[in-house]
Length: 229
Image 1 (cartoon, rainbow, N blue to C red):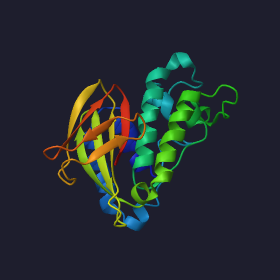
Image 2 (cartoon, one colour):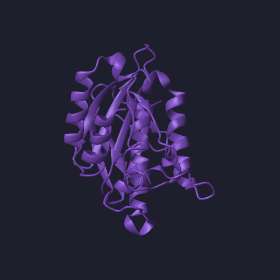
Image 3 (cartoon, helix red, strand yellow):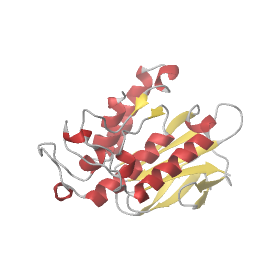
Image 4 (tube, helix red, strand yellow):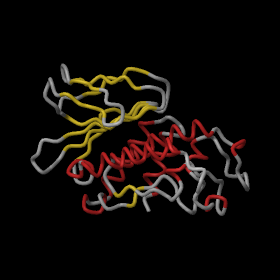
């Protein structure tokens, strides 16, 4: 269970807004494992031994024995769960979803985190996001399951990385996360030819590489999984 990634993504980036610290942690992780092992790590944001991620991302405290909706900001937690899901499906490794996370289940520390699946009370919008990003990964395994990874930007609320296929297909992707206010983000994209068009598989938005840069307009707490056309 890749708790190192969980700490980098959940605590350093989504929690503190320190993308650089998160990227540093992830770089050490990549350096410490051979590629064959790194790409088989069980990537998680929470588990049966931790507070539920949506609860933590919404500001919930693990000192609460039995959490309620009054103990955290559900909307904020949900928005950042979407970011986490996009990251997991875009990053090397084996993305693992703790049951109920995709449906909005929350909970404090063990045993509160082990609540049953919320049958009949699922967050359908959150489920739809998980289904979408899982579909993108499964439809482009040469990129997301096997491709190389390199960081494009890791500054404050912005974390973006590229995935490039190693099978000679020329497939490429850019995964971009914004855990703060809406903003235009300029990414270094010299590894791609000018004129390369990327299409976000979540929103349908497009961006074109120009002058070695890729400029994205990211909304508040928005993520993108962009593929070259």
